[in-house]
Image (cartoon, rainbow, N blue to C red):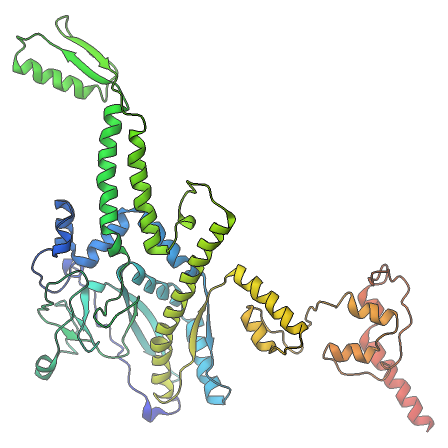
Length: 518
């Protein structure tokens, strides 16, 4: 079996699946015991507190994202730019080994089915603070280790210790990697989840091996290795909206339709009164009533204070605006345009959102480079070889237009600019040497100079990167059919060139005749 170079410095991957999803409900809740609901959640209604106690911190955030449409929309907007970003692998240098490593990582990224869709699952970290994928490795017949699959795992099944090592906290773990007594004796305390002061007490934690789980942590801090969960910041806002919607519904039911009133005699029995109450309930489903003469029925119009219903909408809009600011940093890209504004204000809000997208792309690129690219390099080429960089490139059209104007002015000032850098900056492919490339002056500038004898054929060919020809030093006579602007009327561009191959043959024949005469 073939092996890749530097085999003596390569670590060995773990091929088995470690965090197997159990068939029962163990995987739906956290694997550690906790002492009730955190103190900052006691302000929530009882049904939400019960949901938090049942699902745990991350399960509750998942429940919240599925329940609130505006929160879900903002998170999707935050993820959309990265999902559409172009993924590119950049080589670390020009040496043969560095080019080989870059080509290998690039092929793995491009050839693994569904790899990009699984990588996009890491963007769940925006709402929950961090996301985790289990990497399923495989060794191919050529001896190289490649990615077979990336499998999404729930955050509540894992925890970090104070040294940053990942542990599985539930009771379902692979028996092939049991912790040793030394591990238990030296294992530091597991860090509690954010917004949860309860100590992390795992019944049977399992230390996870290195280079097995890929994580993306959104805005981590030294005291919070689980990142900044944006959905957790919107809990109270979502609760205000839910309570406001219930009160608003009662308001509309009370003042939106006439109130039915039934008058009955004082001597009516309790049984008859209960029947009349059922009649009122039937009014919601039936269009008519059957009543005796002793019972009178009327509809009373209830009046609401002018503009009272607007306060409910204003509170909902305010909550949605605050959620938009929390997730997106602005409001105009995710609101209805309730107030008048200017194009400048909209441009500012769009630039803020684009800056968020650029920062997210940089953070996720670093995570993929330090994990996926680094591990592929370690397994196949050794730990001492620098790994290529994985880049997620987002586009800001307004910024690109501004920078293009600056670059154009720099060129006019005589400042040289690298061609490869120019193509890379503006996301354009570099044409191959044998590929015909479109140029700004293909149809205008050269034809004008050729028509009036300003340039020779060889000078034009030199500008186009072509080899000179023997007959190319003569000035060209004006071409019939050329218009004032320099375009050819009835004569095509190929006909004007009179077939470069044919002219080459004629030039070679002339040189042969001249040599034979001498």
